[in-house]
Length: 377
Image (cartoon, rainbow, N blue to C red; front, side):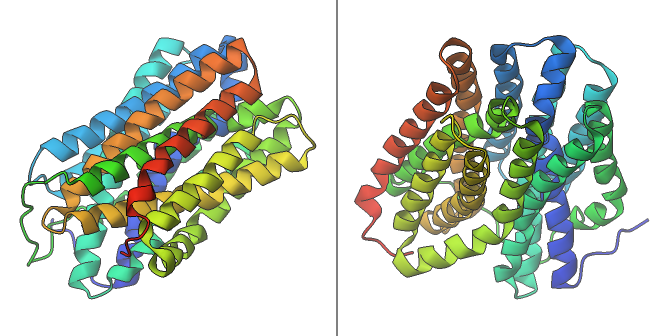
C-alpha cells in the first residue's frame, strides 16, 4: 500500500515536530526528570548515573557520525529505524531494572534519536522547500521543547513509578507512526545530490564553539533535576518542564537576533546565557534559583542549535546536510563528555564544581567565535 505524501506545510510541520519530539523527548531528555527515581531503585551513585547520560549522548554521536559518512542516505530509512530504536529502548528500560540493560538501552536510544532527528529534519526541510515554506522549519524544531516539557510532565504525574513514564513516552511514538510514515516517504522531486564537504576554518570554529556548548548542556541536561532534587524534587521537575516550554519559542527569537547582529555574535551570546544557567544550577540558593536556572538553559539551547545549524548550512552551501552532520558530531562529542565530567565532579566535590566547570569550558569554546563576530549571515 502506497503511503500518501504530505502535501500541506502544516502537515509537514506537525509530522516533523512529532518526530523531533520522540527523538529528543523519549530518546534523550526524559531521562533527566526520571533519573533520581531510577538511581534510588538500583542505588546508583552519581558516576554511574553520569554514565547513563553519557552513553546516551555517545549513541547520539555514533548515529550522527554514521549519517555524516554515509553519502546520499535518504531520510526515510533514518526515520523508520530511528523510531524503532527509540521506542524499543524505552520499553526495554521500563521492563528490566538492570544497570547494564539500561546502558545498552540508552546507547541504542541515542543512535535512534540521531537517526530520527536528522532524518526528520532533512525530510521536513526537503518538503517545506518544495512547498515554498522553508521558514516553517522553526515549527519543526519546536518539537524538542515540547518533548522535554512533556517528558517532565509525564514524570511528575507518574512519580515515583518511572516505568509508567517510559512506557507512556514510548506509546506516543507508536501512536504517531501513521503520520511519521508519511514523513518517511519518498523525497520530493527536484532534490539535489550533496557535494563533498569542505571544512573551512569558519566551519571548524563553529563546530568547536557548538561542541563546548554541548558539553555544558550535556552536564546540565543530565543532572539538573538530580542537583535540585534534594531541595525540592517537585519544583525541580516543574523547572525542567519550564525549560522545555520556553525552548520552542526561543528558537525563532534567537534566529531573528542572529539576522540583526550577525549569527556568530548571537551564537556567542546564547552560549554565554547557557553557561550562566548551567553555573547557576550549582549554586546553593533559594528555590527561585531552580526556576531561573531552568529558564536560562531552556531559553538558549534550542537557539544555539538553530543558530549553529543555520550557520553550518551557510558555510557549506553545496553540502548543507554534511555540514549539519559535521557540527552535530562536535556537539554530540561535547554531550558525551559533559555528563561524565559532571558526574565525577558531583561525586567528588559537589554541585557547584559539577556545574561551574562545564560552564567555564562553554565560555572558552565560545571565544573562538570572536574572529567571526564582524560577519553577518
